[in-house]
Amino acid sequence: MKASFFCNINKSTWSKNCLLKYTTEPFERLSTLPYHHKFWQVPLMVKELGDWGYNVDIMNDHDRTIRLTKQYDLIIDSFPQNRRIYENNLKRNCFKVFYSTDANPFWHNRQHELRVKALNLRRHARLQVKASLPPFNHELNDFDALFLTGNQRTLSTFSDIPFKKTAFIKNSANRFPDVNISQKMPNTFLFLATYPQVLKGLDLLLEVFAKLPDCSLIICSQFQNEKDFCSIYLRELYQLPNILPIGFVDISSNIFKKVIQVSSYVLLPSCAEGMSGSILTAMAAGVIPIVSYECGFNEPDVFFLEQCTIDCIRSTVKTFAQKPLSWIQQQSYKTQEIARAHYSASNFSDSFADALQKLIK
Image (tube, rainbow, N blue to C red; front, side, top):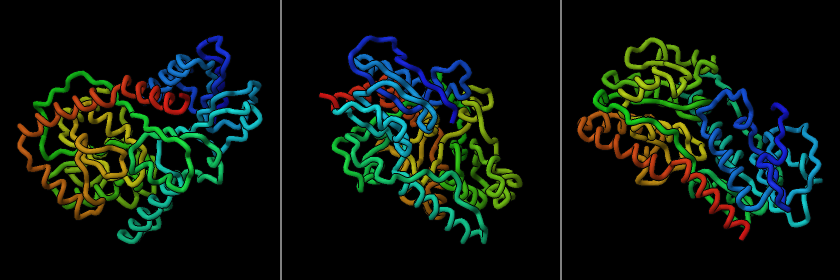
């Protein structure tokens, strides 16, 4: 993790100091992912903290090299596994907040391991678990609060940690202009995710669509970076006419514009999330979401997969592929409106302000 530190980024003169240990990328000139939600969320967090009377310092969450010189009244930390970096910089009554955008790392890793084990049994393979999250080792026992991007189901994965207060943070979607839905194809589904593929459920979708030749799957993810996964699913990824493996895609590109015009649904049978930003991106573009319960959403904003089994996914895909185009068009408009009304930047900012009030009042 690159060492980067912004001191008193608001140039304020308050009497209280806050350390935000999350990411400095939105404030750097050479930003590589300008369409990721953190690029507008973090500046909103900094502004809101300033409005609450804090001078805000910001650093990258995994950085172990910065030498801090201030004493802090408030710590907001998204990676407390390296909390030693600020332990000598806490005022006596410092509030400590864990800011989480995922489920409990222990639970997350366990669900991923079970998915990989099941794949290896089905395919007689030896795929290894990738991108495990460092688990907690008592680092959170004296934290005052949890700010969580997710829902009650996500919160339940932290049941063994005695947070005094908890607050939910609304994830926010990208904004898209009105999408031309006249080209929607009822049998076309989108997989939009990052990595690892098995945690996100791409293996399940490949096995489902391989036996549904009348339904199409468009894959926009970083599967190319997982060579062993691609080797196991060589036929499904590259040799079937109804599966289109695009790979990583810039959501501002023309190719993504074409993808969202034809895709009626976005599928994400993930086993561990906070509140999926990829699903919100698709929703903002009017693509109807069908997700696992672990994706952090509540009814009626999305449609749920009752189970993340191959049989259940196949049955769900066949059911939605038979929906009339008129229903899909109406639901597409509704989905885009849900993203605008409930998952906007202002919704995020309001939820963060409410969380601060719950903690500080």
